[in-house]
Length: 135
Image 1 (cartoon, helix red, strand yellow):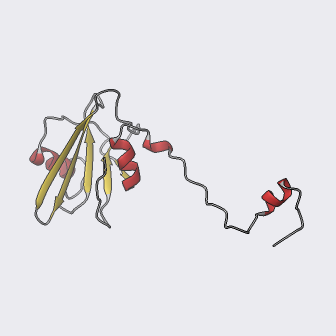
Image 2 (cartoon, one colour):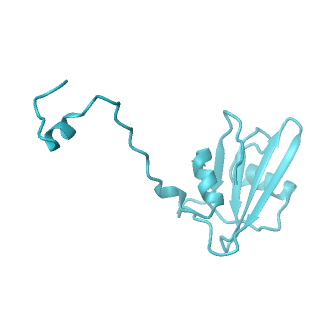
Image 3 (cartoon, helix red, strand yellow):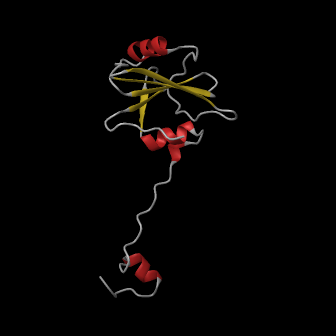
C-alpha cells in the first residue's frame, strides 16, 4: 500500500495499545490527553489494538480529519516495547509502509552506496591485487 505523506508531516507511533472501538473523537482525545500533542496539527498518529492485529491512523488537514484502519489477516503488527506509558516513536514514510505491510520496520537494511564507474576503493584494489594503483 502506498500513502503519500506531505513534506513536514511527522508520523507518530503511539507506544501503548488502545481500544480499537475509538473513532475520530476518541482518538483525538487520546492524542491530547495521553500523548500531550495536538491532533489537529497535521501529523499522523498511529495506534494499535491490544492484540496487535489492527492499527488506526488519525490525520487532520485544513479540510478535516481522516481515519485509516487496517487489520492483518495473519500475524501481528510489529511494535516497539516500552516501559514509558504515553510515549511515541517517530517513523519515516518508508517505515510506515513496512509497518502497514506487516513487516518488521525496525530492522531495515540500508542500501550500500554503489561505486562510481571507473573508481575503485582501496579495499577493492587490494582484493583485486591492484593495491597502490589508481587514486
